[in-house]
Length: 117
Length: 182
Image 1 (cartoon, one colour):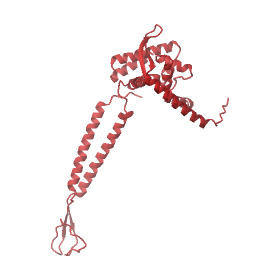
Image 2 (cartoon, each protein chain N blue to C red):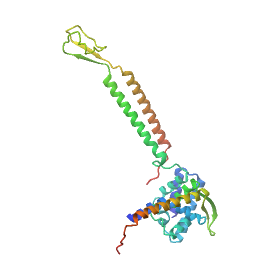
Image 3 (cartoon, chains in turn green, red):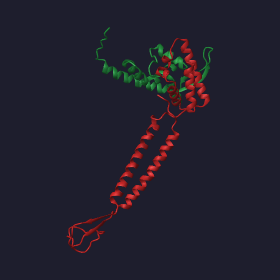
């Protein structure tokens, strides 16, 4: 894996649970649907990550609720949506993320980046 | 892609995942992989590098759901062997120390070859266990160790601790689930 891709994977790993809670907070979604929502925002799953174990952990921790329903005439799918605890965790996590992001930005802001074409 | 799901299914069966849960996960995975394929999305884009390691992926998913124990090396299950290793090491060291003390502290007989004269100088206490011959004769000294019972107790405790450690190791080996290959 390229160094840039590896860093991106590691950065994503720390906040992927928040991203999943955020996209399912827009509306209940099944696994692949969440992947599509993430990809539409530029977060591709290429790398080490997979959302399925993470969805399992969110379910085990009571941060999501699940139910089965048919999807556009297809086979029944397992839909996920944040529980009340999950919404609270999402709010706290977003707050932490923004604080961390601002702190890192403050450190990296003076760095001049020149990309050679 | 169906091969991937089938390998996951086999792994869940091997790990003891209940059939209804395994079927549920397999069905969800198969549906997602099928839809992704129809969209022209590769399995790697959906699953990351897990696409190349179905058994680890299946084990990880089941463990994160809390269906099977977390693989060794993570969480408290991972710390347990470290504690056990430390306990075993301490017991082994205690056994060695006790054995050494017993070997060096065993009642020994040494013959002082030089001739001595009595009385012994007042600043040199005469050992209580010394068998002194008549003045001017060869001196046979019997050294005994007053701490011998303590050494035996230490040895006994070390043996018991090592036995307990051996039992713990065998119990751990029986209870640990087989780990998925990397």
